[in-house]
Each structure stands twice: as C-alpha cells, then as structure tokens.
Length: 115
Image (cartoon, rainbow, N blue to C red; front, side):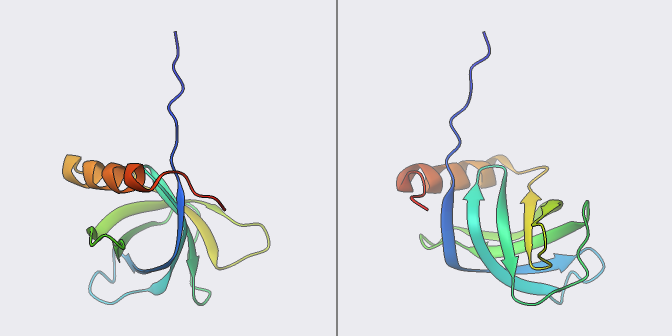
C-alpha cells in the first residue's frame, strides 16, 4: 500500500538567501528570501531579476532563525512563477544526511505554515 508522506512547509520571508552559480561560487549571483520552505526545496524570491533559467543549478546559503546554517546547498530551478522574473521553485537534488536531519528537525519543531 502506498503511504502518502505529510509535507511540512513554512514561510520564512525574513531569511536572506544568497544564490551562487557554479561559475561564481565566491560572489553571489543574487540575493533573496524564502517564501516557502520544505524538506525537498523552497519557493525563492530574489531581490532583482537575474539570468536564471529552468534547470539551472545553483548553490544557496542561508541561516534559519534557530541558527541552522546551510552553506552552498545544491539546488536546481524547477519552476518559475508565471509572469515573474523574480520568483522560482528550487529543488534540493541531493542532501547530506546531516542537512536533511537538521532541516527536518527545524520544520517539525515549527509545524505547517499558516500562509
């Protein structure tokens, strides 16, 4: 029997995210905010339009309010909001077991988003 996994997501618009491409790993390509965070990815809003396309791979750096730090976390752009050049969905294709446990613990402690 297939069991559906409950997805916990939350809004963290106060969390700043720095985005790096693989070509510019030392200088951020863009900066933005987490609009929605889940175990397998996030909805990201960047401050200014950037040359970001579907399937682009990037590295994200952010610190959650509890102090959990994610440095250069691998992500892939999987969707772009219709009519927007600043809102994207990114997927975390691979995660270390420590990153996954840290993110899962953070999300579980806060419960689902109300927005």
